[in-house]
Image (tube, rainbow, N blue to C red):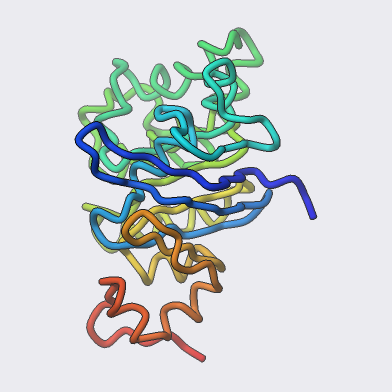
Amino acid sequence: MSVPTIAVEGLAFTYPDGTPALRSVALHIHPGERVALLGPNGAGKTTLILHLNGINLPQQGSVAVSGLALTRENVMEIRRRVGVVFQDPDDQLFMPTVRADVEFGPRNLGLEGSELDKRVQKALRALEVEDLTDRPPNHLSFGQKRRVAIAGVLAMEPEILILDEPTSNLDPASRRELATTLDGLDTTLLVVTHDLPFALEMCPRALVLDKGEVVASEPTADLLRDEAFLKKHRLELPYGFAVAD
């Protein structure tokens, strides 16, 4: 087996008020995998992804990215390896033009000149936003902003790309375009979503987190066929949606 891109063992986290958010979480994501992270509101999904790129450090247990342990000393390298695209793209877009936003990360890694240009153009092309290069991000549609935010993270060439609710607030056409674009990326993906059809479309495997614990790690289609399991963990398919056998 390959060294996991993400390896979490016995991860626990309790908020200052004593509320437990994660309870002995264990999971592995291997290079090239596309995995959905599902669960009801309050399950601990956001707390977990904040550990995966070092915004939070483990109180108990461990997190490793391609064998590198998440420690205070390794935080910057972990953040280079793990790219997170948060739910609201306005939290990540702050430069005067799309190009400036996409080049911000690699420029801070020390890239410049033709190497920087190649990195930026590759990310813009992958997300099909080359025509937006000189536009101010605040003049873009929500779907365009999301694609630019992903391009900015992709330009860092992370080992894993984590997407937090990537389809929220997207119209059906933008959702379809995003799915097509993500499907063309050669990157390990962790997709945190309540959009179960999108999880099925994008991710062969799904993890389910509930009350701070991983309660399932199975093929996505198998999970979504289990009506009793979905009901128990407050997961719900759209009315009339059926998962094919």
